[in-house]
Image 1 (spheres, rainbow, N blue to C red):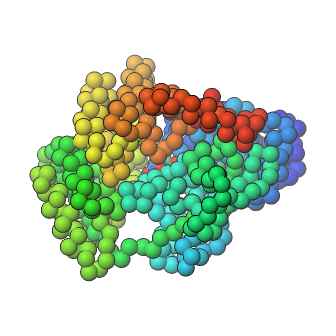
Image 2 (spheres, helix red, strand yellow; image 1 turned 90 degrees about the vertical axis):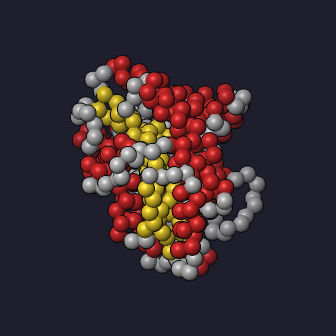
Image 3 (cartoon, protein in one colour; image 1 turned 135 degrees about the vertical axis):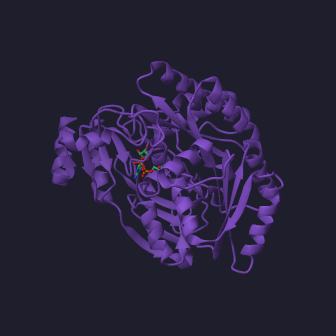
Length: 464
Ligand SMILES: Cc1cc2nc3c(=O)[nH]c(=O)nc-3n(C[C@H](O)[C@H](O)[C@H](O)COP(=O)(O)OP(=O)(O)OC[C@H]3O[C@@H](n4cnc5c(N)ncnc54)[C@H](O)[C@@H]3O)c2cc1C
Protein backbone atom coordinates (compact mmCIF):
# COMPACT_ATOMS: atom_id res chain seq x y z
CA UNK A 1 0.00 0.00 0.00
CA UNK A 2 2.78 2.49 0.96
CA UNK A 3 4.42 1.95 -2.41
CA UNK A 4 1.11 2.57 -4.24
CA UNK A 5 0.53 5.76 -2.28
CA UNK A 6 4.00 7.02 -3.14
CA UNK A 7 3.30 6.42 -6.84
CA UNK A 8 -0.08 8.22 -6.65
CA UNK A 9 1.60 11.13 -4.82
CA UNK A 10 4.15 11.35 -7.61
CA UNK A 11 1.31 11.38 -10.18
CA UNK A 12 -1.03 13.99 -8.62
CA UNK A 13 1.16 15.85 -6.12
CA UNK A 14 -0.65 18.02 -3.56
CA UNK A 15 -4.04 16.75 -4.63
CA UNK A 16 -3.33 13.60 -2.65
CA UNK A 17 -4.61 14.28 0.87
CA UNK A 18 -2.73 12.40 3.56
CA UNK A 19 -3.13 14.39 6.80
CA UNK A 20 -5.47 12.83 9.36
CA UNK A 21 -7.61 15.97 9.67
CA UNK A 22 -8.15 16.00 5.88
CA UNK A 23 -9.06 12.32 5.79
CA UNK A 24 -11.62 12.19 8.62
CA UNK A 25 -14.57 13.57 6.56
CA UNK A 26 -14.17 10.64 4.14
CA UNK A 27 -14.88 8.06 6.87
CA UNK A 28 -18.60 8.81 6.68
CA UNK A 29 -21.40 9.36 4.21
CA UNK A 30 -24.82 10.77 5.19
CA UNK A 31 -25.81 7.60 7.04
CA UNK A 32 -24.83 6.52 10.54
CA UNK A 33 -21.95 4.36 9.26
CA UNK A 34 -18.44 5.28 10.20
CA UNK A 35 -15.82 3.37 8.22
CA UNK A 36 -12.04 3.14 8.34
CA UNK A 37 -9.99 6.27 8.00
CA UNK A 38 -8.72 6.14 4.39
CA UNK A 39 -4.97 5.85 3.82
CA UNK A 40 -5.18 8.78 1.41
CA UNK A 41 -7.73 10.70 -0.68
CA UNK A 42 -6.93 11.46 -4.31
CA UNK A 43 -8.71 14.54 -5.66
CA UNK A 44 -8.70 13.49 -9.31
CA UNK A 45 -8.90 16.06 -12.08
CA UNK A 46 -9.03 13.96 -15.26
CA UNK A 47 -9.83 10.52 -16.61
CA UNK A 48 -6.13 10.00 -17.35
CA UNK A 49 -5.28 10.58 -13.70
CA UNK A 50 -8.00 8.16 -12.63
CA UNK A 51 -6.76 5.58 -15.15
CA UNK A 52 -3.20 5.88 -13.77
CA UNK A 53 -4.39 5.70 -10.14
CA UNK A 54 -6.48 2.62 -10.91
CA UNK A 55 -3.55 0.96 -12.68
CA UNK A 56 -1.32 1.58 -9.66
CA UNK A 57 -3.98 0.20 -7.30
CA UNK A 58 -4.72 -2.77 -9.58
CA UNK A 59 -1.09 -3.80 -9.73
CA UNK A 60 -0.63 -3.46 -5.97
CA UNK A 61 -4.10 -4.90 -5.13
CA UNK A 62 -4.89 -1.72 -3.20
CA UNK A 63 -8.51 -1.25 -2.22
CA UNK A 64 -10.21 1.82 -3.80
CA UNK A 65 -13.45 3.61 -2.88
CA UNK A 66 -15.10 6.19 -5.15
CA UNK A 67 -16.71 9.22 -3.62
CA UNK A 68 -18.72 12.07 -5.12
CA UNK A 69 -21.26 14.09 -3.06
CA UNK A 70 -21.06 11.77 -0.02
CA UNK A 71 -24.86 11.98 0.36
CA UNK A 72 -25.47 8.21 0.21
CA UNK A 73 -27.59 6.79 3.03
CA UNK A 74 -26.37 3.18 3.13
CA UNK A 75 -22.63 3.49 3.78
CA UNK A 76 -21.79 2.84 0.11
CA UNK A 77 -18.91 5.40 -0.20
CA UNK A 78 -17.56 4.60 3.30
CA UNK A 79 -14.16 2.82 3.31
CA UNK A 80 -14.81 -0.62 4.75
CA UNK A 81 -11.22 -1.84 4.56
CA UNK A 82 -7.82 -0.15 4.35
CA UNK A 83 -8.41 1.96 1.23
CA UNK A 84 -7.50 4.85 -1.01
CA UNK A 85 -10.49 7.12 -1.76
CA UNK A 86 -10.83 8.81 -5.16
CA UNK A 87 -12.88 11.99 -4.88
CA UNK A 88 -14.68 13.31 -7.97
CA UNK A 89 -15.23 16.78 -6.48
CA UNK A 90 -12.85 18.47 -8.96
CA UNK A 91 -14.38 16.78 -12.02
CA UNK A 92 -17.43 18.99 -12.01
CA UNK A 93 -17.76 20.44 -15.49
CA UNK A 94 -20.68 20.34 -17.88
CA UNK A 95 -18.78 19.47 -21.06
CA UNK A 96 -21.37 19.76 -23.85
CA UNK A 97 -25.07 20.53 -24.26
CA UNK A 98 -27.02 19.32 -27.30
CA UNK A 99 -30.61 19.99 -26.31
CA UNK A 100 -31.66 19.77 -29.98
CA UNK A 101 -30.55 16.11 -29.84
CA UNK A 102 -31.87 15.67 -26.30
CA UNK A 103 -28.65 15.14 -24.32
CA UNK A 104 -25.81 16.69 -22.33
CA UNK A 105 -22.32 15.45 -21.57
CA UNK A 106 -20.97 15.99 -18.06
CA UNK A 107 -18.15 15.05 -15.76
CA UNK A 108 -19.21 12.84 -12.85
CA UNK A 109 -18.77 15.41 -10.07
CA UNK A 110 -21.43 17.85 -11.39
CA UNK A 111 -24.06 18.41 -8.71
CA UNK A 112 -27.62 17.73 -9.88
CA UNK A 113 -28.90 21.18 -8.86
CA UNK A 114 -26.06 22.83 -10.81
CA UNK A 115 -26.88 20.73 -13.87
CA UNK A 116 -30.53 21.74 -13.64
CA UNK A 117 -29.74 25.42 -13.09
CA UNK A 118 -27.72 25.28 -16.32
CA UNK A 119 -30.35 23.33 -18.29
CA UNK A 120 -33.27 25.45 -17.05
CA UNK A 121 -31.76 28.47 -18.82
CA UNK A 122 -32.07 26.46 -22.06
CA UNK A 123 -35.70 25.49 -21.29
CA UNK A 124 -34.74 21.90 -20.39
CA UNK A 125 -34.19 19.81 -17.28
CA UNK A 126 -32.68 16.53 -16.10
CA UNK A 127 -35.56 14.70 -14.39
CA UNK A 128 -33.91 12.56 -11.64
CA UNK A 129 -34.42 14.68 -8.54
CA UNK A 130 -33.33 13.09 -5.25
CA UNK A 131 -34.17 15.24 -2.23
CA UNK A 132 -30.39 15.56 -1.77
CA UNK A 133 -29.93 17.25 -5.18
CA UNK A 134 -27.91 20.15 -3.73
CA UNK A 135 -25.18 17.64 -2.79
CA UNK A 136 -25.77 14.58 -4.98
CA UNK A 137 -23.78 14.38 -8.21
CA UNK A 138 -24.15 12.85 -11.64
CA UNK A 139 -21.66 10.02 -10.89
CA UNK A 140 -23.01 9.23 -7.42
CA UNK A 141 -26.64 9.27 -8.53
CA UNK A 142 -25.89 6.98 -11.49
CA UNK A 143 -24.02 4.62 -9.18
CA UNK A 144 -27.01 4.39 -6.82
CA UNK A 145 -29.71 4.64 -9.53
CA UNK A 146 -31.22 7.55 -7.62
CA UNK A 147 -34.95 8.18 -7.89
CA UNK A 148 -36.44 11.16 -6.11
CA UNK A 149 -39.50 13.32 -6.39
CA UNK A 150 -40.18 13.14 -10.11
CA UNK A 151 -39.80 9.36 -10.52
CA UNK A 152 -43.52 8.66 -10.79
CA UNK A 153 -43.57 10.30 -14.24
CA UNK A 154 -39.96 10.13 -15.33
CA UNK A 155 -38.65 6.96 -13.68
CA UNK A 156 -35.28 6.68 -11.97
CA UNK A 157 -31.77 7.57 -13.16
CA UNK A 158 -31.50 4.43 -15.28
CA UNK A 159 -34.01 5.92 -17.76
CA UNK A 160 -31.78 8.95 -18.33
CA UNK A 161 -28.31 7.56 -18.92
CA UNK A 162 -27.51 7.17 -22.61
CA UNK A 163 -23.87 6.27 -22.24
CA UNK A 164 -20.80 6.48 -20.05
CA UNK A 165 -17.07 6.69 -20.16
CA UNK A 166 -15.66 4.37 -17.51
CA UNK A 167 -12.28 3.42 -16.15
CA UNK A 168 -12.02 -0.30 -15.44
CA UNK A 169 -10.22 -1.52 -12.33
CA UNK A 170 -7.15 -2.37 -14.47
CA UNK A 171 -6.94 1.29 -15.60
CA UNK A 172 -8.30 0.83 -19.14
CA UNK A 173 -10.67 3.56 -20.36
CA UNK A 174 -13.74 2.45 -22.35
CA UNK A 175 -17.00 3.99 -23.56
CA UNK A 176 -20.35 2.21 -23.25
CA UNK A 177 -23.56 3.50 -24.86
CA UNK A 178 -23.21 7.02 -26.26
CA UNK A 179 -24.91 10.05 -27.74
CA UNK A 180 -27.92 8.49 -29.44
CA UNK A 181 -31.31 7.49 -28.06
CA UNK A 182 -31.12 4.16 -29.85
CA UNK A 183 -28.35 1.63 -30.13
CA UNK A 184 -28.25 -2.14 -29.85
CA UNK A 185 -24.80 -3.52 -29.35
CA UNK A 186 -24.95 -6.77 -27.43
CA UNK A 187 -25.11 -6.74 -23.65
CA UNK A 188 -26.12 -3.42 -22.09
CA UNK A 189 -23.05 -2.52 -20.05
CA UNK A 190 -24.37 1.04 -19.55
CA UNK A 191 -27.32 -0.42 -17.63
CA UNK A 192 -24.93 -2.51 -15.55
CA UNK A 193 -23.11 0.65 -14.52
CA UNK A 194 -26.33 2.15 -13.10
CA UNK A 195 -26.83 1.16 -9.48
CA UNK A 196 -23.64 -0.89 -8.99
CA UNK A 197 -22.51 1.49 -6.21
CA UNK A 198 -18.96 1.88 -7.50
CA UNK A 199 -18.19 -1.84 -7.30
CA UNK A 200 -17.43 -2.47 -11.00
CA UNK A 201 -15.77 0.61 -12.57
CA UNK A 202 -15.23 4.34 -12.18
CA UNK A 203 -17.56 6.66 -14.09
CA UNK A 204 -15.56 9.52 -15.63
CA UNK A 205 -18.07 10.99 -18.10
CA UNK A 206 -21.83 10.70 -18.63
CA UNK A 207 -24.11 11.18 -21.65
CA UNK A 208 -27.45 12.12 -20.10
CA UNK A 209 -30.86 12.47 -21.69
CA UNK A 210 -32.64 15.78 -20.97
CA UNK A 211 -36.26 16.87 -21.33
CA UNK A 212 -38.13 20.15 -22.05
CA UNK A 213 -39.54 21.88 -18.97
CA UNK A 214 -43.34 21.46 -18.81
CA UNK A 215 -45.29 24.60 -19.75
CA UNK A 216 -47.29 24.78 -16.51
CA UNK A 217 -47.22 23.02 -13.17
CA UNK A 218 -50.00 23.28 -10.62
CA UNK A 219 -50.37 21.68 -7.19
CA UNK A 220 -53.06 20.00 -5.12
CA UNK A 221 -52.55 19.85 -1.35
CA UNK A 222 -54.94 17.36 0.28
CA UNK A 223 -54.93 16.61 4.01
CA UNK A 224 -56.27 13.30 5.30
CA UNK A 225 -57.11 11.73 8.61
CA UNK A 226 -56.29 8.26 7.41
CA UNK A 227 -53.44 6.74 5.37
CA UNK A 228 -55.85 4.42 3.60
CA UNK A 229 -57.86 7.22 1.99
CA UNK A 230 -54.68 9.00 1.00
CA UNK A 231 -53.28 5.81 -0.57
CA UNK A 232 -56.52 5.16 -2.45
CA UNK A 233 -56.48 8.70 -3.85
CA UNK A 234 -53.18 8.16 -5.62
CA UNK A 235 -54.22 4.72 -6.92
CA UNK A 236 -57.46 6.17 -8.25
CA UNK A 237 -55.66 9.06 -9.96
CA UNK A 238 -53.23 6.72 -11.68
CA UNK A 239 -55.99 4.25 -12.51
CA UNK A 240 -57.77 7.04 -14.38
CA UNK A 241 -54.65 7.85 -16.37
CA UNK A 242 -53.59 10.93 -14.40
CA UNK A 243 -49.86 10.52 -13.80
CA UNK A 244 -48.66 13.27 -11.46
CA UNK A 245 -45.45 15.19 -12.14
CA UNK A 246 -44.71 14.57 -8.48
CA UNK A 247 -46.75 12.84 -5.77
CA UNK A 248 -45.38 13.05 -2.25
CA UNK A 249 -46.80 12.31 1.18
CA UNK A 250 -45.91 13.28 4.73
CA UNK A 251 -47.37 11.97 8.00
CA UNK A 252 -48.32 13.94 11.14
CA UNK A 253 -44.84 13.86 12.65
CA UNK A 254 -43.37 15.11 9.35
CA UNK A 255 -45.94 17.94 9.34
CA UNK A 256 -44.93 18.76 12.95
CA UNK A 257 -41.28 18.85 11.86
CA UNK A 258 -41.90 21.31 9.02
CA UNK A 259 -44.14 23.41 11.27
CA UNK A 260 -41.27 23.72 13.74
CA UNK A 261 -38.54 24.28 11.14
CA UNK A 262 -40.39 26.32 8.52
CA UNK A 263 -43.55 27.51 10.25
CA UNK A 264 -45.80 25.75 7.72
CA UNK A 265 -49.25 25.06 9.17
CA UNK A 266 -51.53 22.12 8.48
CA UNK A 267 -55.26 21.85 9.22
CA UNK A 268 -56.31 20.56 12.62
CA UNK A 269 -57.09 16.84 12.72
CA UNK A 270 -55.02 16.04 9.65
CA UNK A 271 -52.62 13.10 9.92
CA UNK A 272 -51.35 12.98 6.34
CA UNK A 273 -50.58 15.43 3.57
CA UNK A 274 -50.78 14.35 -0.06
CA UNK A 275 -48.94 16.76 -2.37
CA UNK A 276 -49.68 16.25 -6.05
CA UNK A 277 -48.16 18.29 -8.87
CA UNK A 278 -49.72 18.11 -12.30
CA UNK A 279 -47.83 19.26 -15.39
CA UNK A 280 -49.63 20.36 -18.54
CA UNK A 281 -50.05 23.11 -21.12
CA UNK A 282 -51.21 26.70 -20.31
CA UNK A 283 -54.58 25.89 -21.90
CA UNK A 284 -55.31 22.66 -20.07
CA UNK A 285 -53.67 22.96 -16.65
CA UNK A 286 -56.81 24.32 -14.93
CA UNK A 287 -59.00 21.52 -16.26
CA UNK A 288 -56.45 18.81 -15.34
CA UNK A 289 -56.10 20.11 -11.79
CA UNK A 290 -59.89 20.22 -11.35
CA UNK A 291 -60.21 16.64 -12.64
CA UNK A 292 -57.55 15.40 -10.23
CA UNK A 293 -59.09 17.33 -7.32
CA UNK A 294 -62.49 15.71 -7.96
CA UNK A 295 -60.96 12.22 -7.87
CA UNK A 296 -59.14 12.96 -4.61
CA UNK A 297 -62.30 14.46 -3.06
CA UNK A 298 -63.99 11.05 -3.38
CA UNK A 299 -61.72 9.91 -0.53
CA UNK A 300 -63.02 12.61 1.85
CA UNK A 301 -59.92 14.67 2.62
CA UNK A 302 -60.24 16.97 5.65
CA UNK A 303 -59.03 19.82 3.52
CA UNK A 304 -58.05 20.17 -0.14
CA UNK A 305 -56.85 23.06 -2.24
CA UNK A 306 -55.30 23.87 -5.59
CA UNK A 307 -52.45 26.33 -5.87
CA UNK A 308 -50.51 27.71 -8.80
CA UNK A 309 -48.73 30.32 -6.74
CA UNK A 310 -45.04 29.78 -7.54
CA UNK A 311 -43.74 31.00 -4.16
CA UNK A 312 -46.16 28.88 -2.18
CA UNK A 313 -45.25 25.86 -4.31
CA UNK A 314 -41.52 26.46 -3.92
CA UNK A 315 -41.74 26.81 -0.14
CA UNK A 316 -43.58 23.49 0.27
CA UNK A 317 -41.28 21.74 -2.23
CA UNK A 318 -38.23 22.91 -0.30
CA UNK A 319 -39.86 21.86 2.98
CA UNK A 320 -40.43 18.36 1.61
CA UNK A 321 -36.87 18.14 0.27
CA UNK A 322 -35.48 19.46 3.55
CA UNK A 323 -37.45 17.04 5.72
CA UNK A 324 -34.31 15.25 6.90
CA UNK A 325 -32.89 18.41 8.50
CA UNK A 326 -36.32 19.40 9.85
CA UNK A 327 -36.60 15.94 11.46
CA UNK A 328 -33.52 16.74 13.55
CA UNK A 329 -35.50 19.55 15.18
CA UNK A 330 -38.06 17.20 16.71
CA UNK A 331 -35.67 14.74 18.33
CA UNK A 332 -36.31 14.08 22.02
CA UNK A 333 -32.61 14.55 22.71
CA UNK A 334 -29.41 15.44 20.89
CA UNK A 335 -28.31 11.81 21.46
CA UNK A 336 -30.80 10.65 18.85
CA UNK A 337 -29.68 10.13 15.28
CA UNK A 338 -31.82 9.41 12.24
CA UNK A 339 -31.75 6.21 10.25
CA UNK A 340 -33.72 6.22 6.99
CA UNK A 341 -35.93 3.36 5.85
CA UNK A 342 -36.52 3.07 2.09
CA UNK A 343 -38.89 0.47 0.65
CA UNK A 344 -41.19 0.33 -2.34
CA UNK A 345 -44.46 -1.44 -3.18
CA UNK A 346 -46.70 -1.33 -6.24
CA UNK A 347 -48.73 1.88 -5.64
CA UNK A 348 -52.05 0.00 -5.39
CA UNK A 349 -50.58 -1.89 -2.38
CA UNK A 350 -49.84 1.37 -0.56
CA UNK A 351 -52.95 1.62 1.63
CA UNK A 352 -52.49 -1.85 3.17
CA UNK A 353 -48.68 -1.57 3.35
CA UNK A 354 -48.87 1.77 5.17
CA UNK A 355 -51.34 0.33 7.71
CA UNK A 356 -49.00 -2.60 8.38
CA UNK A 357 -45.99 -0.30 8.73
CA UNK A 358 -47.90 1.86 11.22
CA UNK A 359 -48.79 -1.33 13.15
CA UNK A 360 -45.18 -2.48 13.13
CA UNK A 361 -44.03 0.92 14.46
CA UNK A 362 -46.40 0.46 17.39
CA UNK A 363 -45.21 -3.15 17.97
CA UNK A 364 -41.55 -2.21 18.09
CA UNK A 365 -42.23 1.10 19.90
CA UNK A 366 -40.46 3.05 17.15
CA UNK A 367 -40.62 6.81 16.69
CA UNK A 368 -40.40 7.51 12.95
CA UNK A 369 -41.59 10.07 10.43
CA UNK A 370 -43.32 8.38 7.49
CA UNK A 371 -43.11 10.17 4.16
CA UNK A 372 -42.05 9.49 0.60
CA UNK A 373 -42.61 9.40 -3.09
CA UNK A 374 -46.10 7.96 -2.91
CA UNK A 375 -46.67 8.20 -6.68
CA UNK A 376 -44.28 5.33 -7.29
CA UNK A 377 -45.04 3.46 -4.07
CA UNK A 378 -41.81 4.54 -2.32
CA UNK A 379 -42.16 4.81 1.45
CA UNK A 380 -39.45 6.34 3.64
CA UNK A 381 -39.22 6.26 7.42
CA UNK A 382 -36.96 8.71 9.26
CA UNK A 383 -36.37 6.54 12.30
CA UNK A 384 -35.19 8.25 15.49
CA UNK A 385 -32.54 6.12 17.17
CA UNK A 386 -31.53 6.84 20.74
CA UNK A 387 -27.78 6.19 20.91
CA UNK A 388 -27.87 5.79 24.68
CA UNK A 389 -30.50 3.06 24.57
CA UNK A 390 -29.05 -0.29 23.39
CA UNK A 391 -32.45 -1.93 23.41
CA UNK A 392 -33.75 0.77 21.05
CA UNK A 393 -31.02 0.06 18.48
CA UNK A 394 -32.01 -3.61 18.48
CA UNK A 395 -35.69 -2.72 18.01
CA UNK A 396 -34.79 -0.46 15.06
CA UNK A 397 -32.91 -3.30 13.39
CA UNK A 398 -35.94 -5.56 13.80
CA UNK A 399 -38.22 -2.82 12.50
CA UNK A 400 -36.03 -2.27 9.40
CA UNK A 401 -36.18 -6.01 8.70
CA UNK A 402 -39.96 -5.96 9.18
CA UNK A 403 -40.27 -2.94 6.85
CA UNK A 404 -38.43 -4.93 4.16
CA UNK A 405 -40.62 -7.98 4.73
CA UNK A 406 -43.82 -5.93 4.47
CA UNK A 407 -42.59 -4.54 1.14
CA UNK A 408 -41.75 -8.04 -0.14
CA UNK A 409 -45.11 -9.43 0.99
CA UNK A 410 -46.83 -6.75 -1.11
CA UNK A 411 -44.73 -7.45 -4.21
CA UNK A 412 -42.23 -4.64 -3.64
CA UNK A 413 -38.55 -4.38 -2.81
CA UNK A 414 -36.39 -3.89 0.30
CA UNK A 415 -34.58 -0.97 -1.34
CA UNK A 416 -36.33 1.57 -3.54
CA UNK A 417 -33.67 4.14 -4.36
CA UNK A 418 -30.94 4.35 -1.72
CA UNK A 419 -29.15 1.15 -2.76
CA UNK A 420 -27.67 -1.68 -0.70
CA UNK A 421 -24.25 -0.42 0.45
CA UNK A 422 -23.36 -1.81 3.86
CA UNK A 423 -26.82 -1.38 5.32
CA UNK A 424 -29.01 -3.68 3.28
CA UNK A 425 -26.82 -6.68 2.53
CA UNK A 426 -28.95 -8.94 4.74
CA UNK A 427 -32.18 -7.54 3.32
CA UNK A 428 -30.95 -8.13 -0.23
CA UNK A 429 -30.46 -11.81 0.64
CA UNK A 430 -33.95 -11.83 2.17
CA UNK A 431 -35.40 -10.50 -1.09
CA UNK A 432 -33.51 -13.00 -3.26
CA UNK A 433 -34.61 -15.89 -0.99
CA UNK A 434 -38.23 -14.71 -0.98
CA UNK A 435 -38.21 -14.76 -4.79
CA UNK A 436 -36.44 -18.12 -5.02
CA UNK A 437 -33.67 -16.30 -6.89
CA UNK A 438 -30.48 -16.90 -4.90
CA UNK A 439 -28.82 -17.79 -8.22
CA UNK A 440 -28.90 -14.03 -8.99
CA UNK A 441 -26.29 -13.57 -6.26
CA UNK A 442 -24.01 -16.07 -8.03
CA UNK A 443 -24.51 -14.14 -11.29
CA UNK A 444 -23.71 -10.83 -9.58
CA UNK A 445 -20.57 -12.29 -8.00
CA UNK A 446 -19.50 -13.62 -11.43
CA UNK A 447 -19.94 -10.17 -13.00
CA UNK A 448 -17.95 -8.60 -10.15
CA UNK A 449 -15.12 -11.10 -10.71
CA UNK A 450 -15.03 -10.39 -14.47
CA UNK A 451 -14.74 -6.63 -13.94
CA UNK A 452 -12.64 -6.69 -10.82
CA UNK A 453 -10.85 -10.06 -10.35
CA UNK A 454 -9.00 -8.99 -7.19
CA UNK A 455 -12.00 -7.22 -5.68
CA UNK A 456 -10.24 -3.86 -5.25
CA UNK A 457 -13.29 -1.63 -5.96
CA UNK A 458 -15.53 -0.74 -3.04
CA UNK A 459 -14.91 -3.93 -1.07
CA UNK A 460 -17.68 -5.26 1.15
CA UNK A 461 -20.53 -3.32 -0.51
CA UNK A 462 -23.74 -4.95 -1.86
CA UNK A 463 -22.45 -8.44 -0.87
CA UNK A 464 -19.45 -9.84 1.01
C1 LIG B 1 -31.31 14.31 2.92
C2 LIG B 1 -31.16 13.25 1.88
C3 LIG B 1 -32.19 13.01 1.00
C4 LIG B 1 -32.06 12.02 0.01
N1 LIG B 1 -33.09 11.83 -0.86
C5 LIG B 1 -32.97 10.93 -1.84
C6 LIG B 1 -34.03 10.75 -2.77
O1 LIG B 1 -35.06 11.42 -2.72
N2 LIG B 1 -33.87 9.82 -3.74
C7 LIG B 1 -32.72 9.06 -3.85
O2 LIG B 1 -32.64 8.23 -4.74
N3 LIG B 1 -31.70 9.21 -2.96
C8 LIG B 1 -31.79 10.11 -1.98
N4 LIG B 1 -30.76 10.28 -1.09
C9 LIG B 1 -29.57 9.40 -1.19
C10 LIG B 1 -28.37 9.98 -1.97
O3 LIG B 1 -28.42 11.34 -2.06
C11 LIG B 1 -28.26 9.42 -3.35
O4 LIG B 1 -27.93 8.06 -3.24
C12 LIG B 1 -27.22 10.10 -4.27
O5 LIG B 1 -27.53 9.67 -5.54
C13 LIG B 1 -25.75 9.82 -4.00
O6 LIG B 1 -24.97 10.70 -4.80
P1 LIG B 1 -23.56 11.26 -4.30
O7 LIG B 1 -22.98 12.07 -5.39
O8 LIG B 1 -23.70 11.92 -2.99
O9 LIG B 1 -22.74 9.90 -4.17
P2 LIG B 1 -21.83 9.36 -3.00
O10 LIG B 1 -22.60 9.33 -1.74
O11 LIG B 1 -20.53 10.04 -2.98
O12 LIG B 1 -21.59 7.85 -3.51
C14 LIG B 1 -22.64 6.95 -3.69
C15 LIG B 1 -22.12 5.66 -4.33
O13 LIG B 1 -21.66 5.92 -5.65
C16 LIG B 1 -20.30 5.54 -5.81
N5 LIG B 1 -19.70 6.53 -6.70
C17 LIG B 1 -19.67 7.87 -6.53
N6 LIG B 1 -19.11 8.46 -7.60
C18 LIG B 1 -18.76 7.47 -8.46
C19 LIG B 1 -18.13 7.46 -9.74
N7 LIG B 1 -17.76 8.55 -10.37
N8 LIG B 1 -17.93 6.24 -10.33
C20 LIG B 1 -18.30 5.09 -9.73
N9 LIG B 1 -18.89 5.07 -8.52
C21 LIG B 1 -19.12 6.23 -7.89
C22 LIG B 1 -19.73 5.54 -4.40
O14 LIG B 1 -18.62 4.65 -4.27
C23 LIG B 1 -20.93 5.05 -3.62
O15 LIG B 1 -21.00 3.65 -3.70
C24 LIG B 1 -30.86 11.26 -0.09
C25 LIG B 1 -29.81 11.53 0.80
C26 LIG B 1 -29.95 12.50 1.77
C27 LIG B 1 -28.80 12.76 2.70
